[in-house]
Image (cartoon, rainbow, N blue to C red; front, side):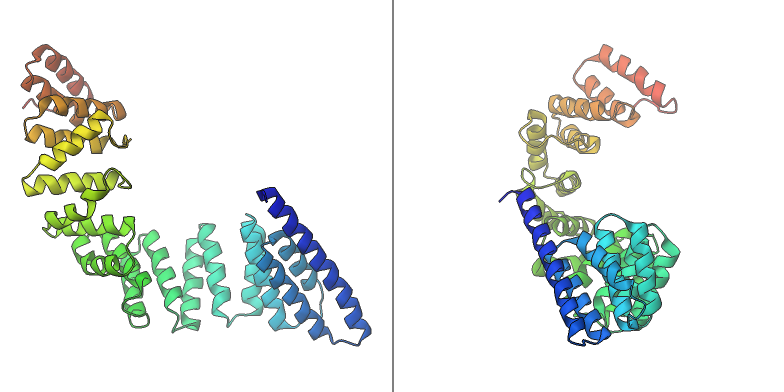
Length: 353
């Protein structure tokens, strides 16, 4: 079945469900069904539509139920919550905000309402209110590990690292110490603070429990900064031609240089220069590979690599300065002089080597 077929089938199912529920509501009224029982069935219908993934029908049915002034408070906040989540899914954050605020108004002691509102406020970049709602959610659910970790991620995003660290200290007393979410968030906070060595224990444990390519690269960087370039290279070397991104390539090259054994880095540089690996769009990858070649007197390969770097970042005087060095070492003096003029045009403060 095609995607459009799936959508059409789901819409037909939702329409049939709504029609059946409407008929059932009429029958319930004839049986003398209480208003609360009818509203509870309406909420169940909304949840069924959500399970089917028909967010338009969810919003419409929830709003239809909310139009009844006789709706009990505990059902009212639930329907506002469902309507808000559906509208958020539909890319209507402003309309969703009205419902999520009403969910908090009618269900102020429900941590989930404050958390949902906080998530939406983050999406709307209303930072102060978002943090306040996360604080309330944490207060109302003191044993909830997930909401504290989510709050910590938002604090990291906002650059509030001290507050994030305090939140993580509280979370550590609630979460399982081997919870990958805790390890990942705490490592992220320490990396954001520029301290990969402090992140090393969590990253090592995370690599055992729930390894991912991204956590592997973060672990490699932490190992490198902790003075263990061999362990860093062990993680990344098998991946450079597969799923290693630009940051990983730079880490791998730095590890090779730190080991004083540049043969692998030179081979990597030559592979990049030959187009044998994915062609990076990061000028610093090419520059770092060129520096490895300079350090091992592979000047022709180094020139090829620095030329690629310059093509990606033509206004970088440092790259052109390295090109001058390579041209001189290759005996291409006239070209070196012309390149030096370009360097001075970009940065008059530079001096020749």
